Image 1 (cartoon, rainbow, N blue to C red):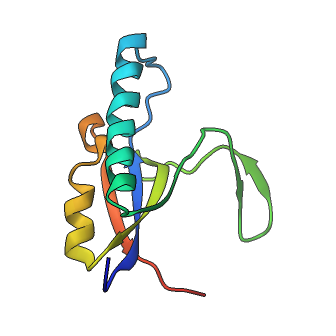
Image 2 (image 1 turned 90 degrees about the horizontal axis):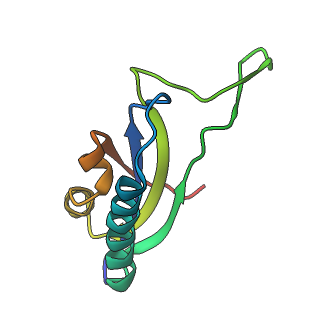
Image 3 (image 1 turned 45 degrees about the vertical axis):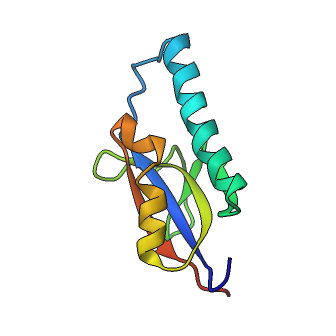
Length: 115
């Protein structure tokens, strides 16, 4: 792909720790994500992807440590993906097919700057 840039898709959703999906719902979610990720890999637009767990630690500015994950505006970060796209608009088109949207979540798209 010529003139491609890399963009990070950040997947956010509202966690519901009291709800456990059924086996059928889990299968459907896994199939949706597998198809989405597989399609991007086949089209050579996928760079990497990660699902985040619910176990974590938060470090404050005073260096104190607390257990848990950040939930802001009732949402948490569920994972990320780096994709290749010509521009931000193409990255947005890629994100429109993301299964997190079917779960009531959202996708934030950010350009990536090398460090």
